[in-house]
Amino acid sequence: MFRYLFEGQALSTKEAVRLTRRTGELVYIPRLHDPRRGRSLMIAMLLAEDGDSYVIPLLNRACVVEVRSGLLIEGTEINPRGRAVKNIKTDTYPQRWFCRPIPRPAPTTGVGSRGDPGEPTNVTRGNSRSAHFRER
Image 1 (tube, rainbow, N blue to C red):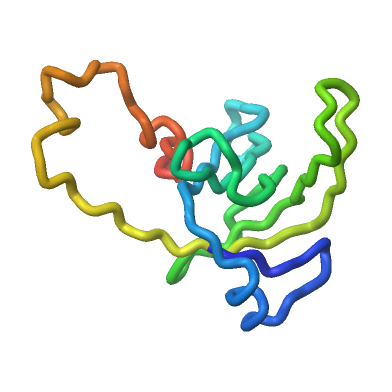
Image 2 (spheres, one colour; image 1 turned 90 degrees about the vertical axis):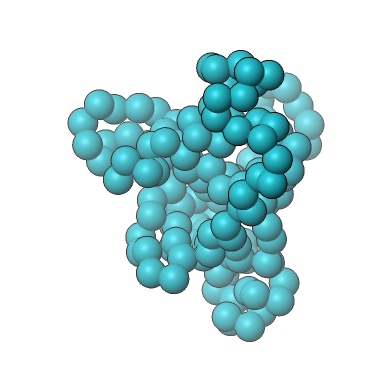
């Protein structure tokens, strides 16, 4: 994944790839759900391997613009300033991401696979986060 803009200003493709290339788990979910098709406000995030921290700032009001060799996602980047719990100050900029999915290798052992008695049946890590995107 890489970002096309820095603080709202366009980067050349070479600069974008060289300076902003990151990997992580792409999450595209509704921030405010509306049952009418296409009306939900979406967010996109790139999470680190721990699944809790952001690799880059998240995109608010995200929308998938194009799908070809990857995903082109546009939205508003939100950069928090400081560490206050209340009255958080932020800088917001238009942003565009290009994401190319990297296939995960299939597990070589039976641990964690479907039907494994050691795994709780209600665990849907990864699936629940991207379920909305797969429906479209």
